[in-house]
Every structure is written in structure tokens, then in C-alpha cells.
Image: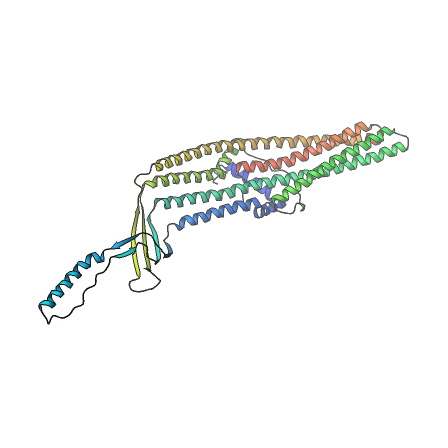
Length: 462
């Protein structure tokens, strides 16, 4: 990713420095990137694509194979060799000439008669036959092999980017899950403090009732308030355990493994405009590079389909033995070298395949334009959500300070009998709610910052 805007560099460096201070979170991110099962599956898909690329490369090299055949045949078609028809008339003439010569010349030697022979009947299939060949084949010109290799290369690069894309998504999920757990944990702490307050209030109210300073209804009211906070605490503890289990799931750890929480500190601020955020997303998102590789694969697919009009030329060399049985003699072995040409002069399906490939490329170009709009919208949404959450933190902090001061005053008045239980309960509830809002706002801001990092691809991997 090449960034030319200095403001973007400043933001990246500042945000990266802020995250680097959170040592526990960075360690958890490293663990997730090493152990997450879904990421391992993505990595296996990439390794599978590399194996497919090696397979495509192998088609350029010669192939050496051994082919052997041993056959036993019975029956089948036959043909007649007319040996008798050709030779018997000659034998008859020779026998007749010898007979006349013996009659004319007494000293003519006695020559046995040549026997008559029959025609020979032969089967097309020999009873036993074998052929064993060592064959070497090598492509000389094959358009399909060339472009198939290029397609596999494009798809392999696209799979590699899929791993990088999921890494960004995993970083986002881990950060959001981490801050959700931190928020749930702090929520439990806030309610535990609130429970201590209402339990202390209950003890105070019971003491006042025993000294006949308040009526029984105030005691019941204080008890009800304790029960309410205990119910809220039980719900908060459940949320904490669920958040803890999900976070550990992302790290492929035991669901109940302890999680170190971040120290409360000043939150990093964004120093970008919305247009700079969009530009950062367009420059950094791996999805565009992945689609470019898919487009290149479509281009090569078009060339591959067009190449079906071209011939294929291969070299082939055979060396082996033939015969009715396995025997290595001077006449049994043979060598055969060939140049093999294959050319489809007319194939009506080729044009249709080329058209399909071209349409597939147009679909990808439309998809790329759509992804660009979606990425720009994600960056805008993430920017404004982060901006709104930033304002909520300021408002929540002011609300906490006001609610804290109000509760302190009401608490003093209640202890002096100048405020009733309803006033005390309302002040305590507002203070607790204000603390919860501030906690939610702070951790929600950090989760939204993780979303912003994902939308703009601004997280820098080590």
C-alpha cells in the first residue's frame, strides 16, 4: 500500500503507537493470528492453490511413462492365406514334368512327388501377445498449457490475498471482542460497587427502623433496591462470561482462560477528514488487488478459449519390446519417434466459450465498481460512527461528574435524615447509569476505532 498524503501517515503512526501501548491486546492479536482455526483453513486453501500452480507448471515438462500389455486371445475373426491355391498348380506341373522325364530318360533320377498342401487359416488375434513400451512425451506448442499456468498463478495470488483479508477481519473481531469483554467486566465492577452502596443503605435503613426513626416501608424499599441491583449484576456477570468465551474462541483457547484488561488511558483521536478516510480505504483495501488478479485470470481464460483454434504439437518417443512372449532378442525390441499434430479445424463450441469468458470478465468489472462503492460507504460510516462515539465520551464524562456530585450531596442529606429513600435511590441510580454510559462509550469508541481500521485497512501488521 503506497500512501502519498502526509496526514494519512500521521494518523497511521499515531494510531499504531496507541495500539502498541496496549501490550496485552497486541499479544492476544499475535496469538489469534497464529492459532485461529478459520485463519488456518484460509492458509490451507492458499497452500492448495500453490499445489495447483505446481501441477500447472508440471505440464511444461516431459512425461515419462511405462505402458505394458499382455493379451491372451481365443476365437474372433480369421482370414485365409491361399498357400495351396498358389503352390499346388506349380507342384502338379513339376510332378508331371518329372514323370515324363523318367519315361523318356531311363537314367533320370527318381524324384518324389510334391504333395498337395491346403490353404492356411489364421486368426486376426494371436493366442498370446505382449507389448511393453517406455514412452517419453513433451509438448512443443500447446496454448492451453501456457494460459492454464497463468490462470493458476492469478488464482493463487488471489487466494493469498484472501488470507490477508481474513487477517484484517480477525484483527477487527479480536479487538471488538476484547473491548466488549472489557466493557462487560467494567459493567460488573460498576454494579458490584452499586450493590455495596444499596446494601449499606439497607443496613442504615434497618438501623434507623430499629431506632424508630423511619417506617417499615423504607426498609422494604431498600430491600427491593438491593434485589434489583443483584438481578442486574447477575445479568452483567452472564454477559461477561459470554464475552470471555467468545474472545477465547477467537484465540483458540480454553473458554474460561483469564483475560488481562487494558489500563484506562487517554484514547487515540482521529485526525482525518472523511475524504481522507475514503482515500485511505481505496489505497489500502486488499479486495481491489484481489479483484485485479481475478480480472487477469478472466483475461487469460479468454485467451485460453481463443487458443482452441490453434494446433497442438507434441513430441513422442517409444522404446519397447513386442512378441508372443517376454524375450529380449534382436528382433523383439523397437524404437518409434513421432511428432504429433492435433488441430481442430472446426469446433462450434469454441466461439461460445470465448463469449462466456468475456461476459465473466464484464461481471467482475461491475463487481469491482460495486466493491469500490461499498468500501467507500464503509469508510464513511466508520468515520461518522467514530466521530459520534467520540462526542458521546465527552458527554458521558460530564454526566458522570454531575451525577457523582449530586449523589454525594443526596447521600449526606440522607444520612442526616434530610432526604428520603426515593431521592437517595434516584441519585444512586443516575450515578450508576452515568458510569455505565461512560464505560460503554469509552469501550464502544475503541471498538469503533477497530471498525474504522478495518474499513480503511489502516492496521499495520508486524
